[in-house]
Image 1 (cartoon, rainbow, N blue to C red):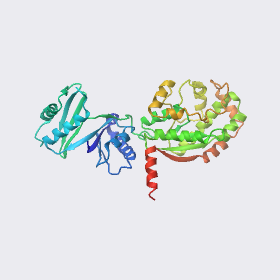
Image 2 (image 1 turned 90 degrees about the vertical axis):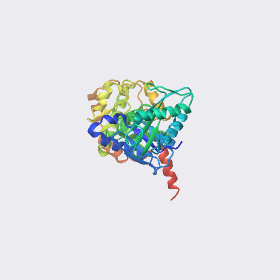
Image 3 (image 1 turned 30 degrees about the vertical axis):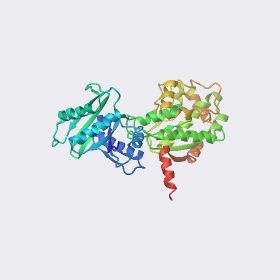
Length: 403
């Protein structure tokens, strides 16, 4: 069946009052980014909903692009007919026939905003419902809890019908809440943390620490691939790869073994915070889950966080591992995360790390090394590049072949 447009419902955005216009504009930008390879589609954001005029584009393809976009509560492919009762009946029958269950129930929900149409809303409900019931014998009406709801909207430019309601990703449009730096390792937790922050409207830029030859190119590529997985929720993510070898080697030589992990995390946080300031970010996001490892006890967090006053967002802090794994599987990062490539967080791991490090001791051990110079050197060596969702990268490659 050919659909004329897709109707998008906002959900949580509807509660934003005077700020709604800004949120809708950001959502429209994100939708346009997701379908930028389909220029025939026109996006029209209204106060209470958004409409995508397909102009012949595949509604199935557009549906898959819309599903991961935060800020969309639900959406429906829409059929348009002329302002003619017979045409409405036929379109309604075709839609219900395609979507109804055997021996199922349905209802018609008509709304007439164009007063010159010959039938009012109640009469249209009865007319269309009766026509569909005559055509489909195993169908019955249930106005309270139908299996299928047929929406019919009469407007001055035509009649619009839909009966499939597809759930969106919910949340807030990405970047409507500002920018943050995501400390992206190769593990399970940090991609999930990035995804959850994005769901609350945060635009994330990924920061990955790379320590060759201790960490391999495969480990670096794994982090890039993880960034690409969560990029589908925003269209693109900026990736920052930090050269961290010299800092880690220095820590291993100069700091007592039990404090290596604490000092390493502090240096990572200092670098991420400096990059945040450079990129005009407002916060730092990480995948810390309280008590999961030695560096994620409250005492460790206190000692590590002492290097900055920047807000640290920890979306998975109260989750257990099974809860985090479930989300990782849902967003398709789990299989990548469990690939056996070591990252900076796992090399030089002490056999007995301090779970309750003393801040005064940490500061004392750090005082024997000029970490400021090492951090500046690492910042100057950062490799920054965009990571796009796979479909967009493929489209770009196809166009590149034309030149």
